[in-house]
Length: 303
Figure 1: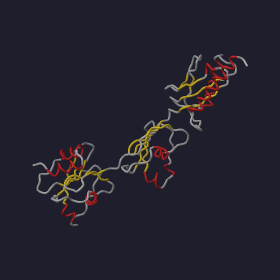
Figure 2: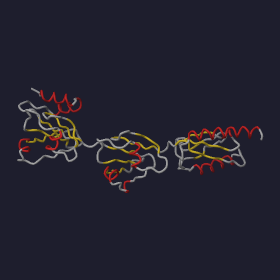
Figure 3: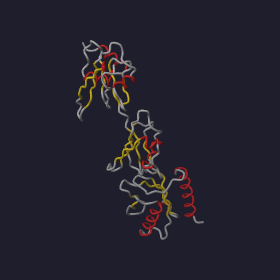
Figure 4: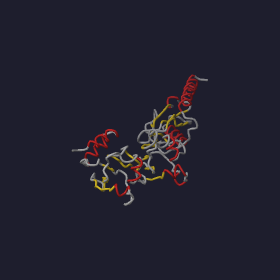
C-alpha cells in the first residue's frame, strides 16, 4: 500500500466516522435544496472530499473545479454522477468514484405559529403531513380557534382546515402533505370582552356567544348594575365602533329575545346611577387594565 493510498484510507475512515455522528438515522433521500449541507467523498482524492453547503443559487463548488455544479433539485445519486462527470471533464481524475450524502436539510422549513403549545420551525425530512406538524408543535392550546390556516411558499394557495376534521374525524381530505416552505398558523378563537358591573369581567369565547350566555360565564351581574347595557361593535375595517343598546331588564325577564354577540364585541354594563364610561376609556381598560383593575375603574365611574 502506497503512502497516498494509506493517507486516503485514514481520511475516508475519519470522514465516515463524522458522517455517522452527524447524519440522522434513516435520513431519506429527497431532492437537494439551497443551504442543505452535503458530505462529498471522492475516492482516492481526499483533497476533493469534505462537507459542502449548497449556495443560495443552488450550486456547489469543489476544489480545483473552475465552475460550480448545480445541486438544487437533484437526488444525491444524481449529484454523484454530475460531480464525477465534472471531475472527468476537467481532467482531474480518469475514473472518479463519488458518494454524496445529505448531512443536514435546511431548504424545507415549515413554520408552525399561533395558538399551539410550542411554536416551532423544523425541516421536512421524508413524508410529513399537517397533522405531523401540529404534533411537532405539541398540539393546540385551549385558546385555539376552529380553523388552521396553511399557506404555501409562494403564498398563492391558502387552505383553511377545520380543526374538528383534522383532529376529530381524521378526514383524509385534510391529510395535507408538506414539502417545505409552508406557513401553518393557528389563530386564537374570537372573544367578546365583558366589562362593567359583572362579577368577573374578562374575555370570553365568541363561539355562539350571546348576552345571556356571556352573563352566565361572567357569573352574573354585580350589585347596582344598570339594566341598560351597551354593545360596542366594529362595523368595518376601520376602528370605528357602533353602539347597540341592550335592555337587560327585558331580556332577563324573557320579555325580549337574547341578543347575539360577535367576536371583538365589547359588552359593557355600567353601574346604576353613575355616568357611564365612553368607548375610549373602555378600550384603555381592555388594553392596560387587569380584570381587578378594570372592575375598580368601571365601578368608580366618571363623575
